[in-house]
Image (cartoon, rainbow, N blue to C red):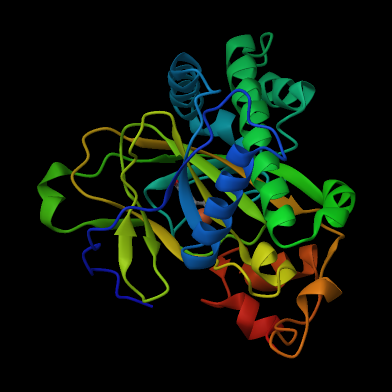
Length: 326
Ligand SMILES: O=C(O)CCC(=O)C(=O)O
Ligand SMILES: [Fe+2]
């Protein structure tokens, strides 16, 4: 893994344009995007997706809503936590390992009542209807992009027959994040505000306000800074579970967030498709043969999260290989 202070190299992530209202399976355009998705995931484990189905007004409304959310008093924010400072549910902040970082996690954000309940906890006088509407709308639209990507992935590996199984196997999880403005004196010394990690689930789709900072490691160990080509862009990346399920066919990139003299906070919104807690992640027989021996022992997703994380952080830099590699 490259060192923390290494400057990113000058390379753009693959760019794939999903902005076509008539995108349908079986058309030449679909097939062309499908091979771009497969190639990007094989080579980088991530790509930039332009997706203008999300109006720019909704995007800016979401970031206004996130500002309102993180501006709430600390005691109010902590009310949303079932388990204090857990990464996956409720509020995480003032964590010794992540002093510039705060986040909220929420299961099933594509269900409006889930967001409404969350907003009723934080704004007890009648919730916050515009917050709920904005976060729910964006979650729904991004879940459509996720479904398109996942359908293309399955088709491109000849695994269409697993689509129904995937639908009952996977669930959506939302995480919204704030990174403090970093002193502009620090321009020459970027601050690592989110540690190097891989995502544990299947697919993550992220978008950010105008403050950049997300970086990916290439297979060669070089760091690439994500600089969006289009204001309607999202980042799509593969996690440990997709890598395991596809028996290593796609890369699962290390990534991190570094900030450097940004006067404004950075906000990001991430929709994570993960296996359900009790699901077993295991490569299908179609992807195991002499040239592609089984790479990982099957695992129950929740057990993987338990071995990969503790209350104070991660246990291993590369938990997938450390705990389940064959
Ligand atoms: O804030 C970002 O852009 C990245 C967040 C991230 O990598 C994560 O939550 O897993
Ligand atoms: Fe991540």
